[in-house]
Image (cartoon, rainbow, N blue to C red; front, top):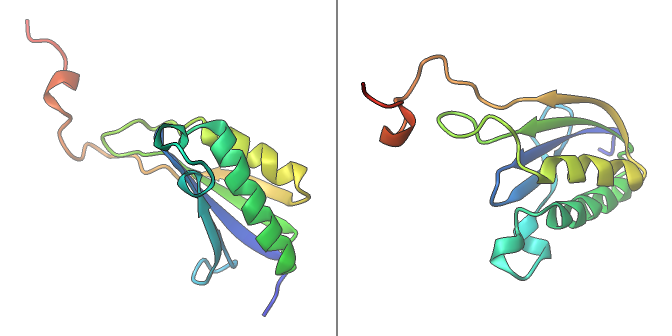
Amino acid sequence: MATNKGIIHIYASHNNTIILLTDLTGAETIAKSSGGEVVKAQHKEGSPYAAMKAAEAIAEKAKDRGIYEVIVKVRGQGGNKSNSPGSGSEATIRSLTRNGLIIKFIENVTPIPHDGCRKKKRFRGKKK
């Protein structure tokens, strides 16, 4: 069942970028790639270059399946960690458009705590 639409999930932390291509329901994974798959050095996994190469691989797999229109969902670490996505998210979106995919809209799905877990000791502020 090849449709012409799909969802690309981008998880961009500061150490790595993971890209997942699913169908519109999100149940079937069509392709996946990460920054660690395309670069040799471990310290370069979170770089924009690694994210760009991983996005190129995803775009090729999407075109092979007949998917040309995508919805992009960007996710940062969230929770107690940083809410902003890593540097690989912008490079991923730019690379997807350069490789011929049409992006319908971009959504930020970073989990935000509603006064959930307590932060680490050094991030709770100084005592007076």
